[in-house]
Length: 162
Image 1 (cartoon, rainbow, N blue to C red):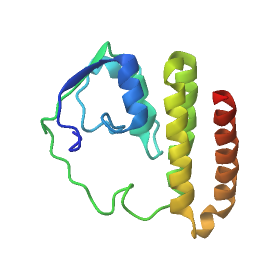
Image 2: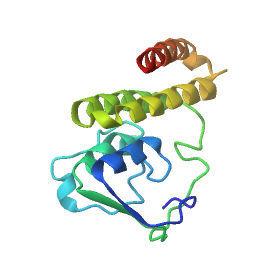
Image 3: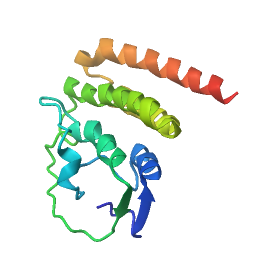
């Protein structure tokens, strides 16, 4: 359920994956979706990481013929102020960057038409992580690496568009 989207729509898997990488109409959360159990027969989340939804969601949609979104709230979910996304920013948040890199590789191998969207999402995650980790000493070295990656990725995308 996304309170900002009020219409019902159906997309094919490629369009749904593009929407997923935009993380606006279709979010990366698993808890607000219904799936056929068959989708999870050979798909498991990695234990011990954060953002496992983000890791698994592209694989779920890739197995679908179509994805339908309804604006009807069919599930009640409590948003805790101390949740992973709303609590203190820790080094474990870096899992999101690692998973984003994995998603880019997944799209390159399986859905090249979605790569540009996944790369844009990754750049957004890099910017957000750099911003949110500023002033947290345990992030200093990693933040420098993320800034270098951001600079390289931004330069590559600019070169590809010329």
